[in-house]
Each structure stands twice: as structure tokens, then as C-alpha cells.
Length: 361
Image (cartoon, rainbow, N blue to C red; front, side, top):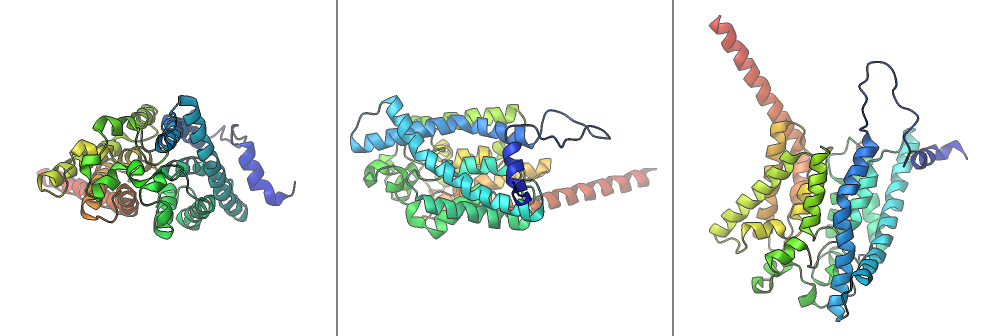
């Protein structure tokens, strides 16, 4: 095959196999951890939420049309809704990745395999496939490749794809009907966030229903049990940092409690955490090792501000009930500044200690 397809062939060859080009001598410390294994671990952590999402898509569909909500038909229906989304996402995203890898004469980075896995999980089940293709290509091109590729991007590509759909094609990702496949009526298809925004808290599902996930929503965001299981996998394998997750939860919960006390919102703090994509974003989006803060103190600040901003956007901006996406993208931009300020503060502290030690001698 011509050399112009080397990037594609290399990506296919190393997808499930260990690359032959590894360091085996010199001053290198080697272990079993590499980019591919990290990506596979993240995909394993995402699997419980995805499996439940398949079932819930079918469950919400059959519930809306008055059919029987049997396990396997629901699961199969959801799988068939998800399959075209993930195929289109990988084809469009990898096309851009391979093109830039070929132009730069580099290998295709494994980072997009997780991005392509997440994008269908944060989209409505009936979103047009051509919109998914355009959004994915836009996110990979302008969110990553123009800055140098994986490791150089400062915005989360999966969230950027969702933001592109939200602002460019709001009708396919906003409102009540889009979250239930098959065009259910507004009452049946309304999400908890939409009910709060429309002033109908009495129609809210119970806290248990939101925790289990038997509610309308994105494919991967509804089941909080599955998301917490994924969080445990990421923390146990040290792929994601617990400091960011903890600080996002803390910032969101404290802000929600303050908003309720001041009368800005009638929802309890734990209900705010369980609604929408807050938990999914805290576990799988905010912890992105490339776009998050890297210093230990910076991670606390970064996560805390995400939680605070997400709840403030929800409560103060009635036109946009889900604030997690914008909060994470905004803090992606400020993450380098947070790290810079933390490092400079540490340098000043050390300099002050050195001066005090010299004066005491």
C-alpha cells in the first residue's frame, strides 16, 4: 500500500497490539502503563454507564409509546440507536486525525479513541448523524489538531463537540422531546433540569429515580450508580485524580445549598448533583489529564470552580439549565493560569523561607 497511508496502517496495527517502537535501553523507567492502556481503562470505566444507557434509551422509548419495557428489547433498541452514532463519530474524527498525522508524518495518537467513545454518550439518541459528523470533525480540527494534536489541546474535544451542536443546532439538543427516542410528548420526555427551568418542580422524579437513572437524558449520563462505579475504577487505577472529582462535588454541593438558602433555587443540594450531566462531567470530563490543572493545589481550585460555576449557571441562567458543559470548558481555559499562579505562589513561599533562614544565621 502507498506510503501516504502509513498513518492509517500504523493506527490499525497498534490498536490492539503493543507497538514495536518501544524504548528498551538507556536511562528509561518502563512499566506496564502506556497511553493505550490508559485509554482502554477509561473505556472500561465508561462501559457500565454505556450499558445502562442502552437499556434506558429503549426503556424511555417503550414507556413513551405505551409498550412493554422488557429487558432485552430495551437493551437492543438502545444499542441500535447508539451504534450509528459511534460509527459516524469514529469515522469523522479519525479521518481528521489520520489526515493531520499523515501531513505531520507522525503516528495517530490514541487519545481520540476515548473521545469518540464519549461523544455518542453525551448526545440525544435521535440526533441527526450528519450533525454528529460535523461536530466531531470540528472538535478534533479546531479543538485539538490546530494546536498540535493530543497533549497540546486546552479544551476537552468531546465537550467541544457537544457545545458545537448546542450553539449551532440548538433544536436537536434542547427541549424535552429530543431526550426520548421516537418523539415522545413533552410531559413524558422532560428531564429534571427542564422541569426545574419550566417551573414544574412538582413533576420532578424522585431522588432514587435520578440516582438509578430511569429518567430521560443523554445515553451515558442518567445512571449515577454506573458513573460512580466508573469513578471507582478510574481512582483505583490512578488514571483520574480523586482531588478533582472531590472538589467538583464539594463546590457544586455547597453552592447548591447556598442557592437554596438564598431562595435562588428550590432544589436540594444532592438533587442538583444528581441532575443532568453534573456527575458524568465531574468523573469523565473534568478529570481529563490534558485539559485539567496539573498542580496538586491547582486541581482543588480547578474542580471547586467547576462545581461552583455549574450550579450558578443552572440557577441564574434560565435559558440554559445544564451548566456543567460550559463550566468545564471555561475552566479548561483557565487551568494553565491556575497552575501558573500556584507555581508562582510556591516559588515566592520558598524564596521567603530562604531569606528567613539566611537572616537567622
